[in-house]
Structure formats: C-alpha cells, structure tokens
Image (tube, rainbow, N blue to C red):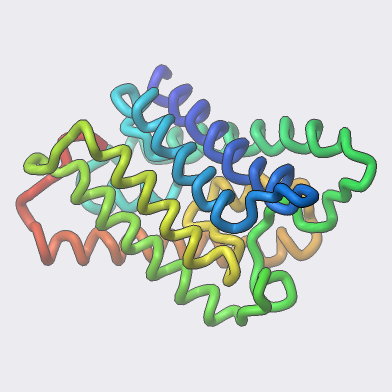
Length: 233
C-alpha cells in the first residue's frame, strides 16, 4: 500500500505542477511563463518527486511507464493494475484541486481546455491526428529508453531523477505545440474528465500512443543493452 500511495502522491504532484503551471501561469498577464515554463514545471515535478518517493515506488507516475516496464520484465504484472489505478486517482485528485483554484478567477472557463491534450482543432498548433500520433509514440519511446538507461546498473544512480526530469522537460519543449504533450495517460485523463466533450472524445489517442511508444522504447533499449537491467523500477 505504501507503493500505491507513493504513486498516487507523485502523480498528484505531476498533474498539479505541470497542468497547474499551464492553467494558472502560462499566459499570466505580462509575466506568463509560456511553453518553456510549463515544460520546466513538468520536468521539475517528476525530478523532485522521483527523489522524494522513488525509493518507495520506483516513481513511475505514468501508466505508460508502468506498462512498458512490465512488458520489459522490470516490474511485476500483479502490481500493474493497482499502480495504474493509483496514478489515475492521484491525477484526478490533482485536477480537482486545480479546478477549485482556477475557479477562483472570474474569467476561468474549464471549456477553454484546462490543459487537455488534443489534435486537429484542439491541438495548440493545429496539428493533425497523424502528427499527434507519431509525436506521442516517438517521444514516449525515447522517454522509456532514457528511464531504462538512467536506472541501469552501470548508470550513476543518484543522477537518474535529473536525467528523467530533464528528458520530460525536453519532450514538452518539442511537443506542446503539437498535442499539449501527453506521454502520460493519467495526466491526460485527469484533466479531460473535467473538460468532457472533445477532450473525452480524443482521449483514446493519449492512451494508445504513449502505450505503443513505451513498448517500442523497451524494445529499442533491449537491442542496445539487452543485459543491463534497471536496478530500480
């Protein structure tokens, strides 16, 4: 139960930190943090929570990561569903808190997007479904390769959270204009539930693409380092 609570708690921080920065601070008058600030917020949320609870749960905070690690044999199958449930609950709880905070501003309207992921008319840059699919698959694949490499036995273990956090920052710098960046079904689901409508209709992509990307990333890592398994998952 400590592991599941850690996953819930860590995912809460990821969604509150990342989506919170997008909803509350990205376009704040004159001093908005913009795409770069939001990208840093997502990366820093994972970095800080990986140090805080990584020794307890492995710091997945992402169903795609858990599925990928399970597929690669680095995570027990029996814990997969409880981890995903914990991640979803943490994300939804964070989105609920964020909604309460954001609703304190008179101009807030959850239908404006609430940091939801989308493609086509709901992509920040108007990118197509296929562009969004390729972007999410490729970036999640690289994310898994980095996670596996950073946590491998021969890697400098104390620096793994830094590498993973910076990787997530870079992923957001690349893909915020395309999909608002998912690579994490829990993050996508948490805010989409409150937006409803188009966000729910397009949510399938932000489960399918990250999961496919995670499986691809594990396969790529196996080709490069078949015997160098992670020490912490």
